[in-house]
Image (cartoon, rainbow, N blue to C red; front, side, top):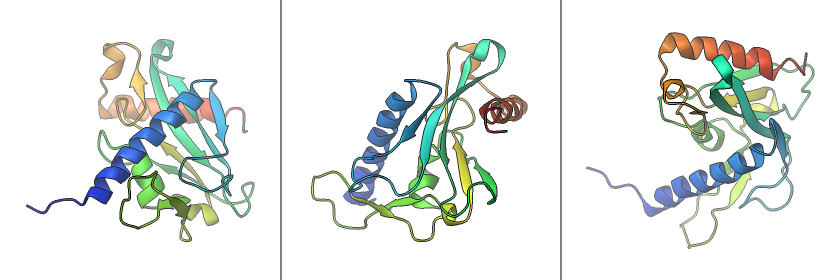
Length: 172
């Protein structure tokens, strides 16, 4: 069995800590702009918003999202909805390791905060991306009750439908 490098473990720990700090920011209101991230030198060169949208009866399901506007022309460029497979895998993995605007600088871990660098191949160069932690219980999405904490595929499809209607009512 192959052993994962310590750099991978530290990157995962960093993603978890970053997620908690983003979660704390997003709990201040429905959505919050994020201008700075640990490990990135200076303000972010793109627009990032995080937050929760309540869905289901009594808004007992809180879906967490990251929204990154297109770096080219947000009003004209397409919008992609990104749901990471799982369940249980946060969209932070796609944000940093697949198509998001930032990635970890690949260096040997030295005990400090991992450095973030701009991803030159990010899809946000040509499109806005809405990353959503779905189903409930994935990433930072959660249920306020035990019943709301469980989900099946049909519930998830209704939840994302309601999420999109609510989240983008203000943008329409």
